[in-house]
Length: 52
Image 1 (tube, rainbow, N blue to C red):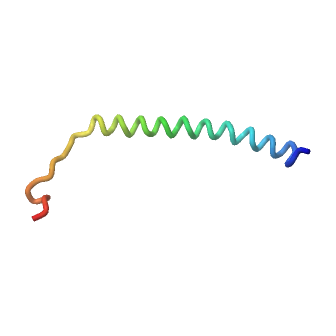
Image 2 (spheres, rainbow, N blue to C red; image 1 turned 45 degrees about the horizontal axis):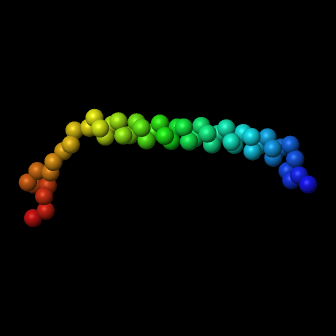
Image 3 (cartoon, rainbow, N blue to C red; image 1 turned 90 degrees about the vertical axis):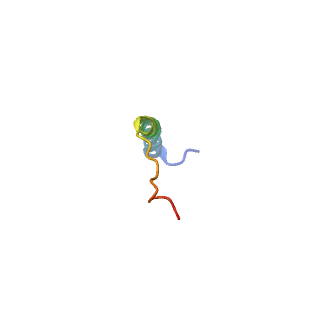
């Protein structure tokens, strides 16, 4: 017995493609954030920034 018919099958097929795209974009975003952090200048707190 098949549930949902052709419309459900088409929806599942489309979602499988979108999930792959989402996964790829997420990995790319993590890579971009990592690159930004690697290139960033580290700031050290000044005497005024430190708690008393």
